[in-house]
Image (cartoon, rainbow, N blue to C red; front, side, top):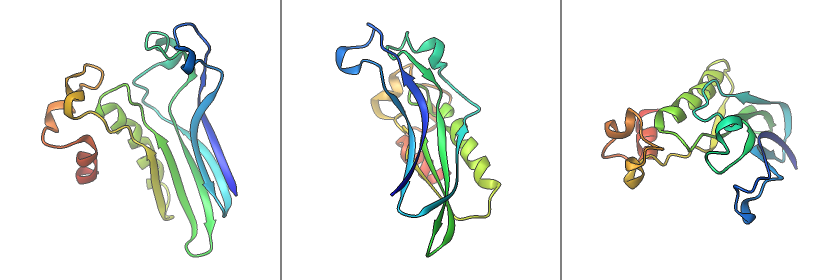
Length: 157
């Protein structure tokens, strides 16, 4: 088994966290495969709705880092080289913030002619009762009425 891991955050220990959520770990994006990697890289997003180094304490999640995407070119016997992307888009923002982060990945995809697979946690949660939360509200909040965020992504991207 081959794998790559791109660290997004180092979680900090702090009394603001509950005991079960204390820091001391890392989290990020990974890609696992039984095939060989041709290359791996981390794509740092150009848009960060939350500055976790400075705002994390206020949000109850003191941490160091920022959202990124993991990318790997995998050599497969059936399709040759395939590009895989593993995403974890920001959840403490509205849909526009996630779309801007997704655009970074789409821009990277445009630079390649290889087959591509995009997966991960898109945090498409700005619908239903969450629309009423100021955390998830932006210009798309009411423009997407009648859709869940995931449905809007599926029909428009």
